[in-house]
Length: 70
Image 1 (cartoon, rainbow, N blue to C red):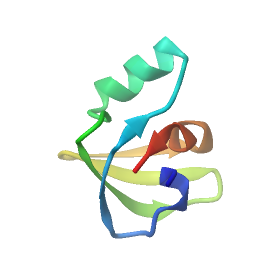
Image 2 (cartoon, rainbow, N blue to C red):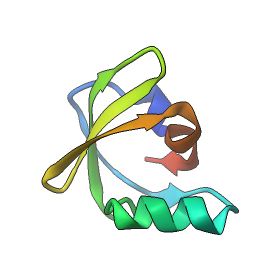
Image 3 (cartoon, helix red, strand yellow):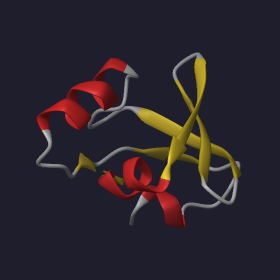
Image 4 (cartoon, helix red, strand yellow):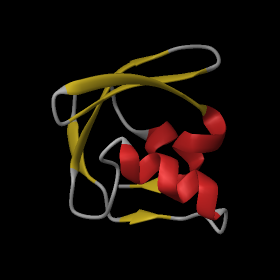
């Protein structure tokens, strides 16, 4: 399931980061977004999602959320 389809407030484990763009992949990795890591959708906004990864909260757009599979 793509992260954009996740339920708010539920913790998920990232199964795959599905992107062929190395720059995008490196950016997600720098946020702590990689296979096996836990991620929680804090809220859904019109343009994207607010997610919690490790000790940080990030606002990501639909392009990024579509690349993350949980």
